Length: 116
Length: 114
Image (cartoon, rainbow over the protein chains, first blue to last red):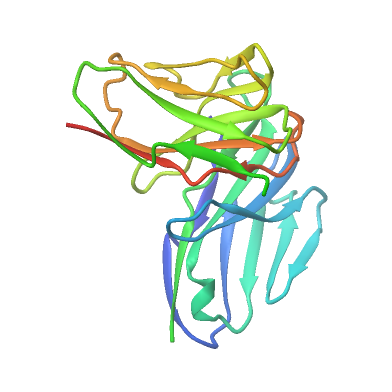
């Protein structure tokens, strides 16, 4: 099982604040990195699929960067709104040391609460 | 609308009983997956299927069984051999089993053993 860590575990910000969180993953045998947004009582939804070192993706006020050499991705939210409150999951796709197969491993998520 | 439907949303099971969680997708996806979430942990893969009539164990397959008789259906059975079945279960699918494809999720099923 590959080690994928997200930090912080939870975050409380005020409306209008900008924020960012981190996904760390093994720097070897990288294939792709996904970000998902998971609102309470709904299904996780894909935000970004990132495949190349140096990738930067943007969707509205949310953007993400990728550094495969050092094994991290940042997710940024500019001017947070209450509707941004959700758990943000990253998923790393690499080669499993145990099986040699490609494997997708989720982090445990960052729970964001935006106070109005 | 296309999507993934899981049922039931909430299920209570007595110890020693098998239960089956349903997952249906109308996205015409080849690959389907079952994940489990426990508090404070990431999603862990139970089983996945790349194509009809084929499935593979994930990281925590013990005590679970699946079938893939139809492309659109991937039911998960939680057997009495699963020592700690109380959890949140998510079904998912992707266009193909190749890595990099976006995964689409159902809304999940809560299983509680009483």
